Image 1 (tube, rainbow, N blue to C red):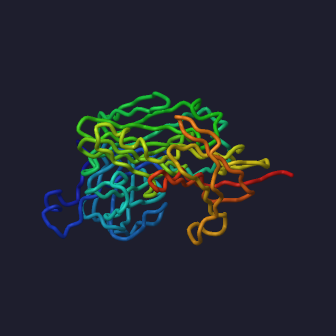
Image 2 (cartoon, rainbow, N blue to C red; image 1 turned 90 degrees about the vertical axis):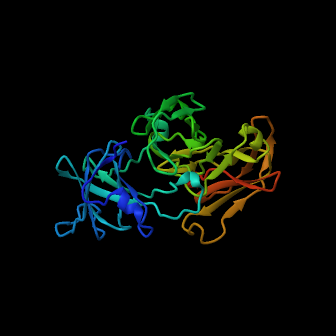
Image 3 (cartoon, rainbow, N blue to C red; image 1 turned 120 degrees about the horizontal axis):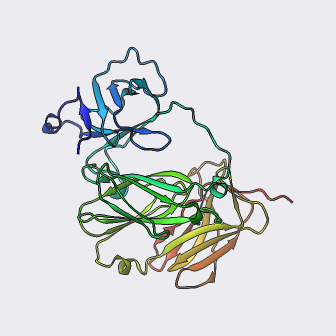
Length: 380
């Protein structure tokens, strides 16, 4: 696949012939609003750190020039860990919003990072408009669908993979990645509206012959575009990736379970699981889950759990600087084949993080999604 033109960068052969050379780096140029790659963008790089916004780069020493390919990226060699940059499109300079760089060492699950091809991302304002913050509860007021976007890559090489079939299990919607590896899948608002986050969840399953089947569980159906990082590994088996972030951002805290048996469900049948965590009653306001009346409860749905507790960090105390507050154990109020229901009455609180932890029959700790900001505003 053609990914662009490198004018001043060394060739792949010379970069890989020396053991002292760093591995090649995929350099992406993406639109900061959509996370879509920008093809045909001209990128000049050089020493320093002068990329953000319209920093004066008149005296910059440009040492390499690239033109991004169809997916908005180019394979580069000897790209410094820090670099100055200038991005233009059709002769017009674009504002650089941020620069991201994946490290060359990663201790988390291998399903969340490329193995042998580091990446650097330059996010730009292709329309040169300023960021506008919205103070509306889009969860309940908009009919915009949830649009999942992902450039599907080979875990080893970073090459984009076309023809990957993707199925949304709960809504039944399917899609296939295009020739540039891009997946676009829209879930209508009807699958989200009328529910309190994060009870509106979806599971995406990615499959292509020759690659592991990849199941991405508990993705939150927020309105608007949701970019995902999807890496598939060659081989046979299934990997289950359980999202534990309300913002759908892949982190090392997510649960990843590789299953190499022909029937992965059999292997996971007795494993403990928290299916959902909800606060009842509650509403969403400005990024917070708010309780506006007394008697709110934490409601956990789970399987194969011996006990469940609720944890949170009080807002203003600093996340991780001290042990979290907790409430529990929860009381099991209902049992069914679909999952047991656990409940507990909650005190008034203002939390920066809020999650549940359970203990399964094997003594393993299983976690729920982190609900983020949770607060009480009860009018008395």
